[in-house]
Image 1 (cartoon, rainbow, N blue to C red):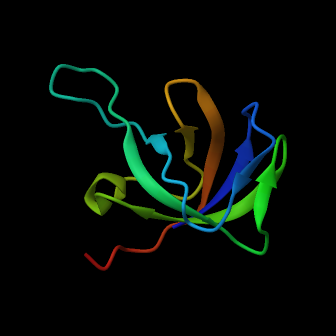
Image 2 (image 1 turned 90 degrees about the horizontal axis):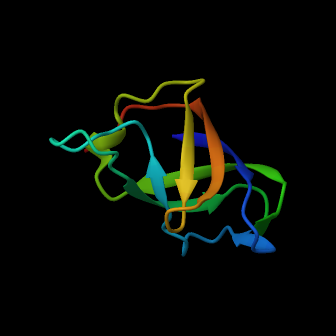
Length: 99
């Protein structure tokens, strides 16, 4: 899945080498109805990092791919490093998972 990410957080930049494993609000909820965040590793395409207010295409590697299967092109999801929003992403390409 390729995402177009817009960084909204206060830190100067977001590393694009796959070390960052932010949490994502992709619309899932727990059995009790609470919002459930999903973890996915993040790689920036064609750049070393994304700066504050910048936009870039990224690829993600989710810890639980089955939780992401409902997403389609055009969906907007929210990235968190903790509870505050760190950025938003729009799905621009969604390929079937191999797992």
